[in-house]
Amino acid sequence: MEASFIYEAKGQTLIIRLPKELDHHNCRNLRYETDLLMAENYINRIIFDFSRTKFMDSSGVGILLNRYKQMKAGGGRTAYFGAGPQVQRVLKIAGIPALMEQYENAEAAFCE
Image 1 (spheres, rainbow, N blue to C red):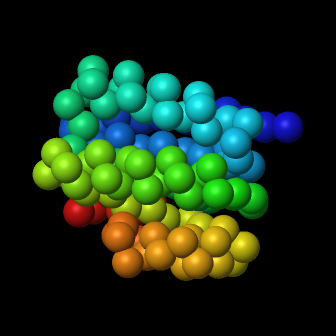
Image 2 (image 1 turned 90 degrees about the vertical axis):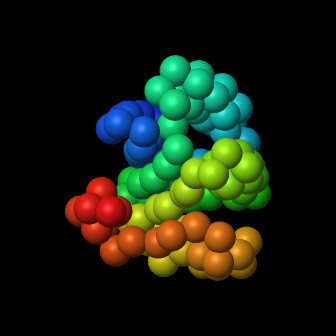
């Protein structure tokens, strides 16, 4: 099972390329690693890349909401792109599109 996250900091933006499955097994690592990266890089925007993600459970939704609240409290923003139909359905049920900016692709997300 692929559970690796890929992180890329570009200025004050943190891009998180999510794994095939975003579930309770790997969300603890995501929370810990992003806490460190956010503190070290003075992050004010997080972009989640769902291009590889095929499955997400409530733990995945929880981490997204946690990062959204954390960014909002600090005046930052969150966004995402690349969600396939199954993941997009979970995001819609959770109300994520109303909270985060959604982009068609990586280029659109990074252009801003």
